[in-house]
Length: 296
Ligand code: NDP
Image (cartoon, rainbow, N blue to C red; front, side, top):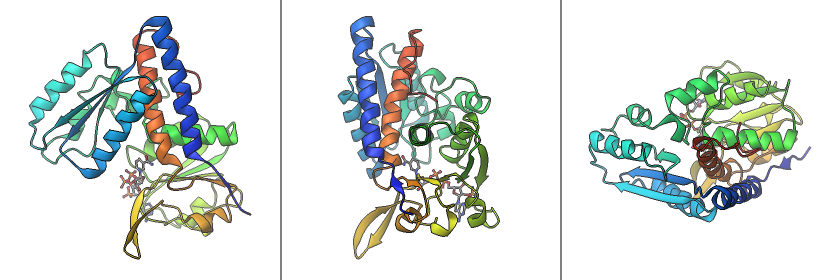
């Protein structure tokens, strides 16, 4: 079997197009221009790249993009003052604090100081609780992107066996909650799971969010399963850096029914979902209907 490739790049472009159309309508009919503020503390090179690309795409869909670049030595109190100002700024509907923060800053405290309604990363403890209890929340962007791709590819997910490998707060756990919300039978696997390959072979949907290059091989995959590779790992191949996922693509594609590539799978969907969340936040803030198909 050779798997169908789920093209995250093309799907993300479609999502951004839907967001742009809805933003244009909001501006025209209601005079509301959604705004996203991104806060970057320090100059981590990977974070710089993400922030730049987020700003560019935010403007491309017609939203206001505001960037706050603060020095690495910024005091926690100063960062909290900035977030408090953004919380009450009516032009800003989404606030994203780029992680990781420098070690002297308490990430939990900082994230929980964001107004939950503007927490477009979905990391605020209120949003975590709302998602866990099946209520309307801001959903973390990467798992939301995975869910959208699965729905697009499979239609209804009801009754399917889903295995999520990884139990982090930003990917594994919210991914499992979303799959449960769509009535999958969900298993969360992690580093202590016994006979991981056998657990994974029970999955109709296999999501890998491990952070270990090409760890999931074809013998972990049930024939015909849908495989979502969240991993982003940089490895050295003959002196050159190559981007690979947590899934060994060739070996899994020979068994799976469908698979996301790296790059070009989950990655582009993450930013598209950040834009979708900002739009959703703007609609909710103004008591307007949420965009269809862009929320959990
Ligand atoms: P974390 O390091 O926070 O979590 C990794 C998880 O994998 C942990 O739960 C860990 O288990 C589990 N794990 C580690 N080794 C094994 C193993 N040998 N067998 C089974 N489980 C294992 O990572 P994140 O969730 O933050 O990220 C996961 C991957 O996704 C990374 O490659 C990251 O770069 C990528 N990522 C991609 C994004 C995107 O936009 N595409 C966004 C966010 C992340 P335990 O808890 O027991 O230690």
